[in-house]
Image (cartoon, rainbow, N blue to C red; front, side, top):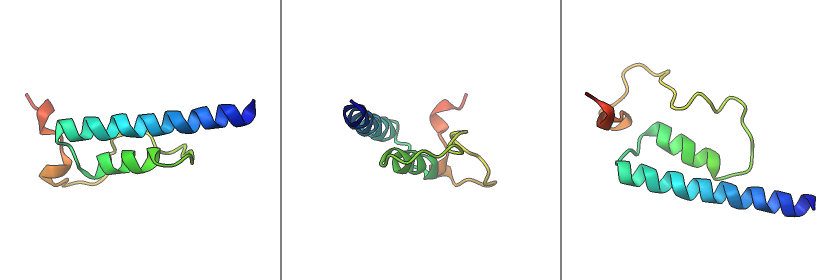
Length: 72
């Protein structure tokens, strides 16, 4: 039962990765934070400090790292 649950969770992670990759592609948002999210959901390791997402710790983000689609 535990092995089946683990397999289900790994499959769910793979689905999440595929959805995120599709959304990134459709939004033309391929910045550092998008890549960080994809990298995180590629594996089954849990990182309690993954959130908040996106992080804006770096001042002076480059234009390709910003999501200009949400600008007014």
